[in-house]
Length: 140
Image (cartoon, rainbow, N blue to C red; front, side):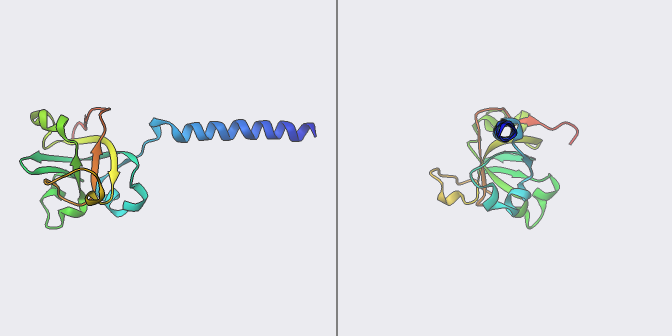
């Protein structure tokens, strides 16, 4: 009985540690827009880091896999719409046409969300979080 009690205690502690690690903000996965689009149901409603090429301006709130993918005919496959892009828009010289890592909640269909977005490249979107700020990916 003593061995069972020790086992049960160790099992409880190890599962608690694993659960805490799984909930840790550092465990937020970094993905590309095309990975989000290919796995819409899986990422829907999840907080993610998205690495991509930002294209913002008048009626443009777009995040692509790369600059090259933003210029292709089927660019919608490699693009997610950026929602809540105020920080990027207010610093366009710093962030526009750069590779960035953005953090936000992914949605698989912008039409089913409680916000209006008229400048999108796709029905999928990343609703930017207030923190952390966009991170410029150097050398890309």
